[in-house]
Length: 196
Image (cartoon, rainbow, N blue to C red):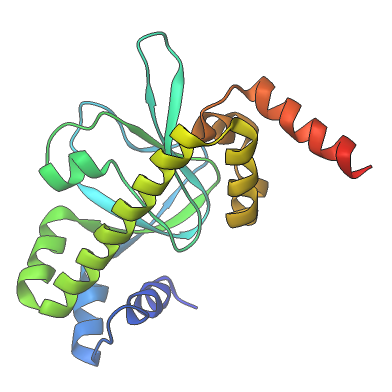
């Protein structure tokens, strides 16, 4: 399956594209390859693209005043990633977005996305639905972080994203779940003991 076919299939689950609309989408998304540990967004530079993951895993994170890093977003195949605040408002980024594996991505520029949305209500609808889903996901995540224990957050993540758990390094997963790597190890060891 070609990279562009993957995104067309993804978009067609939300809105049905004609051949002409498919060609317009294909013209706006550029295939890129990035290596493990390569950055696609860095603080103080404007995030000019949003990325659709064809293959690979990525992590978006910030570094706090004490040097502690906090994972804001993870992404694997069929997920999107960027520093959205920077991308949507075209202002300097505050996050790093880094590849956790070698990746194949499709990128769209802010200008091309705006042009697509002005050109056709279907594109407007697609990107609006993506924004609504991302907003609902983020709210759910904040509520989980505020109301659940570390172990409950880990169990929820395991149940909902088992593929992600196997792909993402333990330090990144711990940071995403709001705990130390040591504490995550302790939770995992207790689960193994309970099973045996």
